[in-house]
Length: 456
Image (cartoon, rainbow, N blue to C red; front, side, top):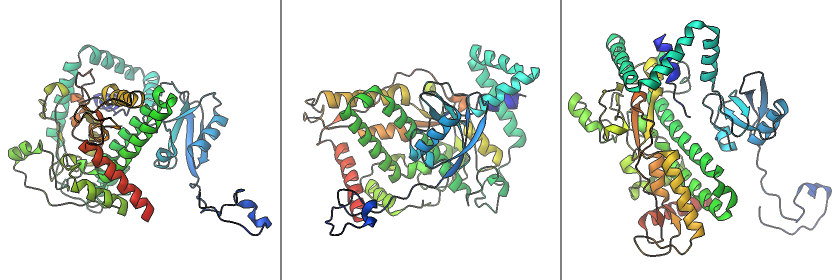
C-alpha cells in the first residue's frame, strides 16, 4: 500500500515566395499559379495524418481522430466537445499543446484532454487514483497520508528516505549495470525504451525530453504574457529570444549528456564522490549530430560558450547522487540519496521522481525578469548599458539560457529534497549593448545560422 501511495503522490509533475517571372502564355494550367505571375515555388508537403485520442477532463467520452496540424486537431476536437475557447492538453501531465512543432514531437495515439484556457487538468494518474479511491474504502487511507504530509512534511521525508534505504539494502542488484546494449539486458528496455539500441541512448533522450519541457514551458508562459500579446516590438524581441534559445539547444544537443554515463566531461561535484568510491576517469563518448548541429557545436566549442555546463551528472557506471535540497546551500545531500537507473528497469522508473531543480525559479523569477527586461528595452530605448554606457539593444539571451536549461542553475535532486518554497535569489539577466561580449557571441552564432540557410 505504501509503495502504491508513494508512487502515485510522487509522480513527477511536469507540471506546448519565390522570385517573380514574366509569363508569355495564359493557359488553363496556370490557374494553379499565383495571380501576380510569380513562378510557382516548391510545394510544401503537408505533415502526414496521425491518429490521436481525445477526451474531456471528466473522461466522459473518448474519440479517435486523425490530424496533421494543431488547427485540424482543434477543429475536430471542437466538433466532439463544443466549447467557445477550446485548448488541448496532454492527459499524461496536463501540459498544453500550443504549436505544431510540439504536436509533431508527440507519438501517434497520444491522449489529449480538451478543456478551457483556465481549466485545472486532471492527469491520467490523478484520475485513476481518484476513481480507485472512491471505489475502494481501503484506498481512502490516502486522505490520511495527504493530511500527514501537510502537517509533518519533515517527518514524512525521513520516513520515505528510510523506507527506500531499507529497500535498497534488500534488493540492490547492480550486476547488470555495466551492460549497455539492448540484446545484453533485454528487460531494461521493455515498456518504453524498445526503440533504443543502448541504455546510454535512452538516457540521453530522457535528458533531452526534460530540457525540451523547459523550452516549451518558457515559450508558453512568454507568449501568453500580456506584453507579448499587446506590444508588437516586445513580441518581436521575445520571438527572437526563443529562436536563439532553439539554436543554442541544437548546439548542445539539448544537454543530452547530463544523463549519459559515456560523456567524457563530468560535473565538478562528482569529484568528491570519485574520491569516496575510487571511480576511474571515463572513456570518451560521442553524440551523433547533423551538419547544422555540428556547425553550431564547433562554434560554441571554439568560444567555450557551454563547455562548463555540457557535463554528465553520473559516474562511469551510471550512479547518480542527489545534490541536496535548496536549503542545504551546496552539492551535498544530507540524506545521501543515490540511484543507478542503468542497473535495472525498476531503478529507471524510480529515476523519474528525481527532479532537475531550478535554484533560481523558472516561473517565479527567471521568466518575469525576462519580461521586465524586454519591456524596458522596447519602452525605454535610450537606456544605457551598465558596463559600457552605450545604448542597450538586447537582453542577455545567453545568461537566461543558462539559467533555464543548464546545470549552472539546475541541481539533480531526489523528490524528497525538492523544496517547493519561495526563494530569494534573483536572475542575473540584464540589458546588453553591442560592446557586450555576450551579445557579440550570440549574434555571431545567429549569423552562422543565416549563412547555413543560404548555402543549404
